[in-house]
Image 1 (cartoon, rainbow over the protein chains, first blue to last red):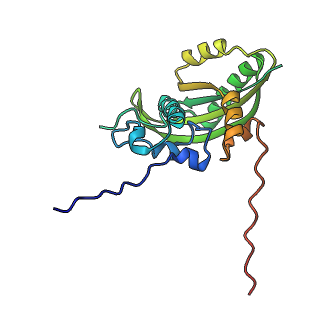
Image 2: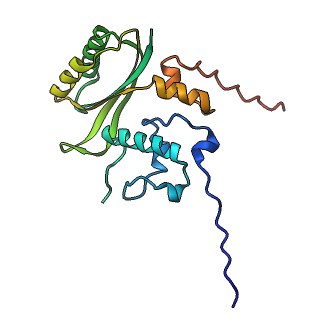
Length: 75
Length: 135
């Protein structure tokens, strides 16, 4: 029986790669990429975002939600 | 002397006219100046669809003010009371940005428009015009 070999692409933090240190709540184009259909914040185990950047991202998403730039839920 | 920078985000009633919006924003700008802040940039995004309805309203007028203060920290409490009282202000958000920006400028390489707005980063030069290929 052939053993299945999975190649999983190594996940890297986009923020580290692009040098994005200031996650702006007004940048909905960026934040939208880290939102699931349900409008939940994409967990870092999936996106590969590092802990430091995930914290900034979370803060920004929550601010954007307050100003109705991003949804809290989506049916 | 500490220099602090802030952003004030406003979501206003979409039924306001441009003049009414201007008058309202001017009033808040006056309060900010009195509180010891200087308005360095104003962004008006116009009418925008909201991500969710607020009191059955699906649109809002977005205004972002960029502020600087030198010396004593400005007090926004009076302004916030007024913002809370005004039904034409659907949402507002005050964020202090100087520390975040400074940290980001030390570490990151990405361009930060929010830093430029408050003068913490030099404005980015105009992109070089693409040279037109000679025939």
